[in-house]
Image (cartoon, rainbow, N blue to C red; front, side):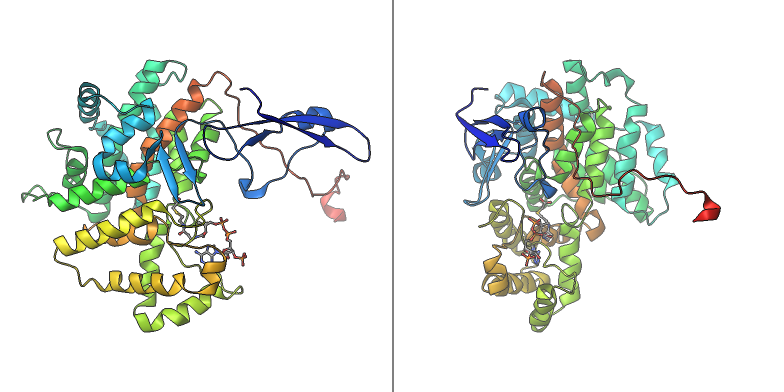
Length: 432
Ligand code: CMC
């Protein structure tokens, strides 16, 4: 990379200097290369939460948090949401370009031929209690896949990486559906390869052997949109987890399983589940002021779930698209008078005019409305984060591929600001 500007940092106590180069991205803020700091000045940088740190170079997704812009491989999310499909977006994220018709057909065909999971893997689910959270089941089953697909575990072989990519994108809906059926106590429904990706997913979730399942076109369309919007979001916590785990050279199933675990938290993918719990807790519009008072009280740990984002400080473009789809889904399914939507709209309106949220630039994020759509599709709350994981698998795979394919790849190994005791002598137990 050619530097576009240079900075000099001087230690005023020792007079030692370090010359640092900055690089310009194709779009966005310049990035300072601080790698020479340790060699030149014996310094590490300290940046909790990575507020100012670019952890890698990437060509996949761009976010402008101030202007509410999200681009996958340069294409605006609004255009992809309107015109594309989840599988086409997955192709775009992984291969870098929109596919031709032939390429897309071949990709879809490959995905559809990898939807089944090994029967032994299916038996894993019986080891879980019926009320095991599906995220625990999904992350465990994904990690276990490394024990089954030995033919494609050489991370230095591009064809192996590609087979893995197709396999995991194809199988994640099957893995999720098996977890759901296990919780329900219903028989597992095998994938149907003549159905498109999202239709197949809904069929595996809701079909039962004794009755035909009727797919609602709006449900398929809404699900496809939600998967597109959640497919990638540059170096978020779960993607960074996949990269960090993957940087050790571990197998890709282990890395994706780590990503699922990181996504589970309520500050990240678990927020969609938390939003619905919050709306139910608030109950009625009258209770909103009391709830917001708790959110603003620093002694109380309550947050307005589905609000705020580390990067978006103006609006989340995905939230705008989801809000519209939410209205469409509810009206087409004849549930326009949904009390949770009414409550969410009122809560959003009040919060957007409240000084606390305005001054902190807190706006609805992608998850403020996604749970309402999932509920309308009869997907239960405990499955929401799993739905997010299905979508984000495409992004995780793209980032893992990009990292492994980069000849400059190094194991991720951050340093620390140590504030513990200095060396001391062990004290025998009787003398403590
Ligand atoms: N409700 C109330 N206050 C909030 C919220 C919220 N949702 N989000 C941030 N704040 C306050 C926070 O208390 C702090 O106030 P102060 O300056 O007085 O201490 C200030 O805003 C900055 O917050 P922060 O925690 O430093 O911001 P962050 O960038 O580290 O956190 C976040 C981002 C998404 C974790 C946070 O906004 C949050 O917890 N939101 C709720 C959970 C949520 O909806 N998560 C989904 C994110 S989008 C899906 C995804 O990408 O996973």
